Structure formats: structure tokens, C-alpha cells
Length: 244
Length: 69
Ligand SMILES: [Zn+2]
Image (cartoon, rainbow over all chains, first blue to last red):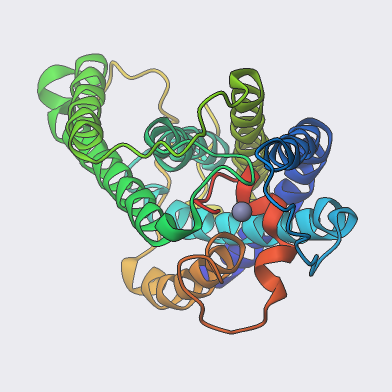
């Protein structure tokens, strides 16, 4: 049954990746083009002998087949992981039916996996980062991601523990508070990364970053809405609850 | 629990952990490998040296918010 859920999760993830690709293609790509144009203009203005970088992959391929492949592989992987977490959470952490469980899980995962890490280490357009610090930046990004996921697990466990004493509403507030406190401490303690050149277009940066969040939002919305419906049919009748 | 009106009448049955675990290990590793290829191969580390993986998925990598150049 779990293997069946995993395959369904990956298929839903591929579908979500296709939607995310569509969004990124329309709303994200123009900003990547602007960022590359900006980089070239800056290199020219600073009189750097515009080192003709040899293109391994053409821009058209990067923005087309490359973006599609990246989105779909990422979507399939996220969908697969989602299905495994769903398999554990369903009937254990929540008592909701498959659709509501999947929907809630997707919202929680979007906050913990995308939003919180992006608040500390936001997406950057091409040509902004310093290649020499890529190792350190990658490390910090994943530390933030892991802390965020652990904080989410702690928050849910705390809320469940307090549920019978405080009632659902107050237990939920306690869990959310715990999450915010852990994240606040982590984001305060972790070093800031800012490699944006002086004078870089703030508007371009904002638009690039919102389109990045939008792409993730599309991905998680499709997973959250589609997986529950698809999982419903994979769960044996005994494990299924009547949707309230 | 009688005050929770949102809860369904029949409680869903959890899937036993021993059933989930093998799939979680196998699937978890496979999925993380997929994310690694899109997000980090030939960035901070290189597992398989084919020069163009990084370049090919470069737009997705930046738009998905992974640290890059
Ligand atoms: Zn890059």
C-alpha cells in the first residue's frame, strides 16, 4: 500500500511540476532574462573585457527543456516525499480524511519547507551570488531548511500533547508560538548572506523572488489538492474515513 | 473529543510504521537524489561529473531558490 501511495505521490508531483513549469515559464523567465541583461550591462560598464562565456547550454534550452526537466524532477521528488509523510501522518497525527489531511499537510509543508527558509535565504537571480561562497551558502540554506522542518515537527507534537488540556484552539496557538520562537532564534543566530551588488535593481529582485515563491505555491497547491483525491482510492476501505 | 465537530465519525486507521519504513528509506533516498540533481549537483559538490547538468537545470535551480552563483 505504501509503495502504491509513493507512486501516486510521484505522479501527482509530476503533474504539479508541469503546472509549476507553466507558471515559472510565464512569470519567472522574464526576470531571469532581465537579470542576465543587467549582468551583461554591468560587465560592459565596468570595462571588463566582456569575457565571452562559452555557452554549454543555450538560453532557449535552459528556459525550455531545462526548466521543464528541473520542475518535473523536483515535483516528482517532492510528491514522493509528501506521500511518505502522508502515509505516516494519516490517521495518526490527524483524524481527517485523506483530502483534508493532504491539504493541511501541504500548507504546513509549504510554510516549513519553502516560506521559512526563503525568509532567511531568499532566491537570487542568476549572476548575483559569489561562486566562491557557494559551499557555505548551500550549507546555511540546508541548515535553515532542516531547523524549520524540525521546528514544525516539534510544534505539531506540542499541539497534540496539549490538545486535551487546552482544547484545540489554544493548543494550536501554543504549537504555532513554539514554531515562531524556534524560527526566530535560528534566523537571528544564523549569519546573513547578502551578495547583491550595490545599485542592483530592487524591483527586479522583488519580482524574481515573488515569482519564485509563486512557483512553489503552485507546486504545493496542486500536490495538496490532487494527492488526497488520488490517495483516497489507494487506501483500503477500512482505512478510509467518511469525509466530514 | 465530543466538542470537535470537524472530525469525521469514523477515525481513519493509521498505516503501521513497519510497513512505511522500508519504503521511506528506499523512496526517501531516491527523492533526495532527485532534489540534489536539480538543486545542488555541480554547485557546492559534484557527485557525477557531467558538465552540463548544472547548466541544463540552471533556471529551475534559481527559480526554486537553491543557492547558486
Ligand atoms: Zn546560478
